[in-house]
Image 1: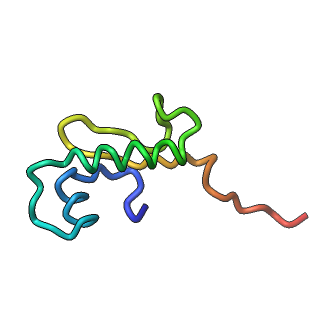
Image 2 (image 1 turned 180 degrees about the horizontal axis):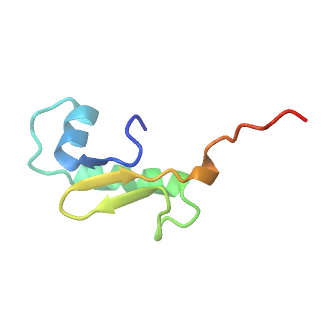
Length: 74
């Protein structure tokens, strides 16, 4: 959430979430990302917000229409 639009490396996410230097098996991360998609995506099989970047990690895509808009006073 702190870095929308940036690709976050799988190993870095694993270290941050589990506070460990062991990143030999990041399958747990895949499972947790799947659960997160189930919670926030309209269609988790075709995610709009949480994208997998193959061979690298994940990216949070927050489009302009999902951000709060500033309304002008009338």
